Image 1 (cartoon, helix red, strand yellow):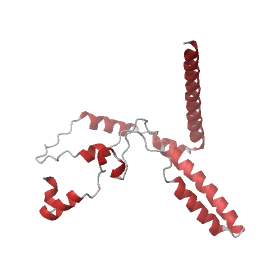
Image 2 (cartoon, rainbow, N blue to C red; image 1 turned 135 degrees about the vertical axis):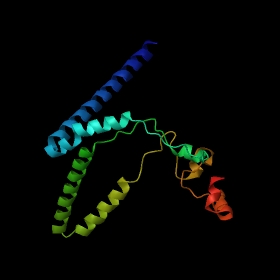
Image 3 (cartoon, rainbow, N blue to C red; image 1 turned 45 degrees about the vertical axis):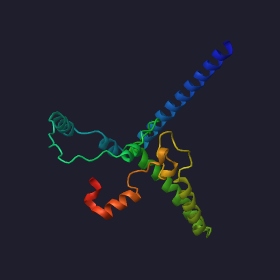
Image 4 (cartoon, one colour; image 1 turned 120 degrees about the vertical axis):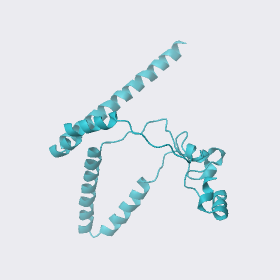
Length: 182
């Protein structure tokens, strides 16, 4: 029992250390972005008083929409294609995004000019395109509950929205575009 308790405490300490390190990295990233960001970009983030008042007025007045006469049938595929991730995705601010990609572009251009001087510009360009393709493809496994684009790999072979199925194609041919609402 003592060994399990010791193991649990060590695991909890390790998790706390990891969380603290993540928080410190996020704080230092924010400080760095705030330091680098020009003043006029910082001012763009802060809404003016007029905009806040307009937003408050819009929120306080209810919007009455007319009820729809034709209800769309609930489709099982639309429910399954909306993936709710267990791990919330962290959205980066647009300032951080702009600064990060500006630095990446500057580094790439510098290296490209260097390789052009060495007369290996085309080779560098091809390798950088291949690396870009590799980095933009997902290499991690699917998250729990995430739907695959290939219906064969999904539970109950459920397809995602926008997939042309044989049944849908038959209905469109037999009944026209209006046959889709049946």
